[in-house]
Length: 223
Image (cartoon, rainbow, N blue to C red):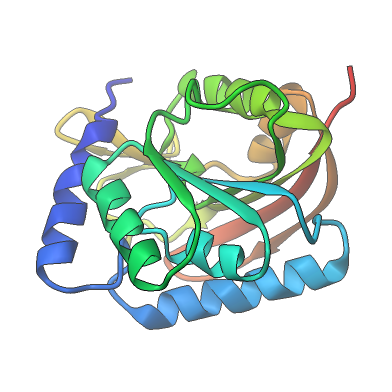
């Protein structure tokens, strides 16, 4: 299946020009996600301190917020415009956060077992086919043994009348031959995560329209 991850940069350029808060067009979306994360952290499985990495960090909204809570924060995104935007926001808010352009399929910027906490905040559903296991492998490499991996990803079931270009057989949205999103069913995604070597501690599905959202708390298996 063909992919084009670099196309995200055009979206960030447009959103920055339009003075939007980031990938999401509404600040309300970020507030709601922060409330969601607060509830997860309060559950007690996530570390309260340590080195934190956000995959697909975009304009840095979440990473900067967590830096203010005391995490040593890092963010990676394939879009150079997003990273420049995140750095600009961190500087304006006088926050120390480390942002770099990179590919979540290898995370070559970071050394082995570097992080205590890795967040996939709506990046995974953009990763297609065999690349998904590559991403999981890269996360396992940079995450400490027993380290915490939090996933928030769009999933099925999907309302095909509201999700454009959705192919129910593959679970992808496909535009001009390019797969853009994966809406796998929760059981399928959970199986992928376990296959990659993570132990799932907690998961939940929020059913919505046009799609559901899966949240997974997992830890890196000790070798």
